[in-house]
Image 1 (cartoon, helix red, strand yellow):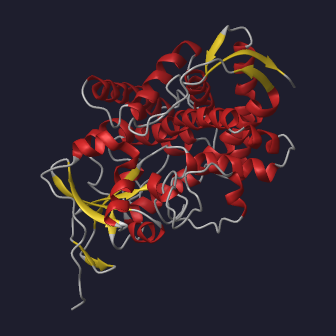
Image 2 (cartoon, rainbow, N blue to C red; image 1 turned 90 degrees about the horizontal axis):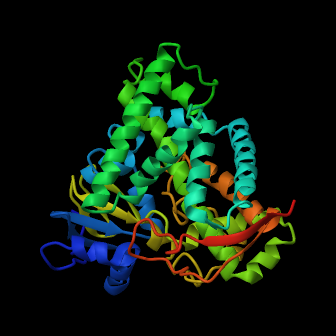
Image 3 (cartoon, rainbow, N blue to C red; image 1 turned 45 degrees about the horizontal axis):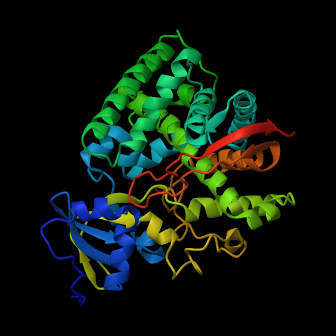
Length: 419
């Protein structure tokens, strides 16, 4: 029998409140204090294992050791993910559903997305030029809602955009909230799922005809491993799993603007027009700033890793933010340095802002390519195509609130198109 060690353990009855107080830094703080990339705690009244780092990510994404079924807390399913979505599937069912998502991420599909994004930026800038001041986060969410719907083939009227933007935003803004904010997120999801389910039914009845190869078309007609169409509710959840994360890219757009403002030396490097450096800058924004704090799974079957026992069914959290700030992986991880990506080895387990592992076989976020394309267009506009002033404001961002954005939501004014 293999020798085992006692896993470092946080003493106490439950540490959910500590988790909420420390936010993105909760796991990283304890990994440092325990001098261990794995420790045991109690969250939401149950035993939980927290882990971080490259080796831990490799283990976490081993489908023989972990499963996603019944892993995410119900409050997260009710706001962020929805029920029966791809995030909660395992094995062949997950791979088959994941192929549905990856099918719209073709080079042609991403090129179409880029063109849509550029057009919507042009429209938004024209609007902003007429405004005294712009709250970038709010405007970016609405712009991303329009981009997402157009790319996904979802018909939405202009007078519906503001309401839909608010509802999609509430899904990811309320995932870690409690009380009224959480219930607003639940109500928003219920409202959008009902609306989207009705659209799915209209597609199947021939009353709505989305363009082929769009998410709405493919997801409406997708068949499971038994050859059955997804029920309308599940198809609706999966279309929303395109729209909601795309609206959340507004967070990264805010952080692009913040990085350009806080690091003028990086702006000068970008102004040379080096596309490779622009790519590295976008990657560093994704690594450096807080986005999604962790992902969850449950131990599929008993195993031993690094001398520690993992019991079947144990809730396990992988530290995304902490892995992206792990000094064992990144030199001076708390410094903003796009140049680090010039020598990055490209491991799918060391750089995991939206999750890790393999795109096709594993649980790595299918929308990562979408995020990159949209962010590169956003960087181009904020850097090269508009001029604006950044008035005095509170640009600090919380390491407790999830998601985190600058407190002022990045206010800009005197916007002028330059090219």
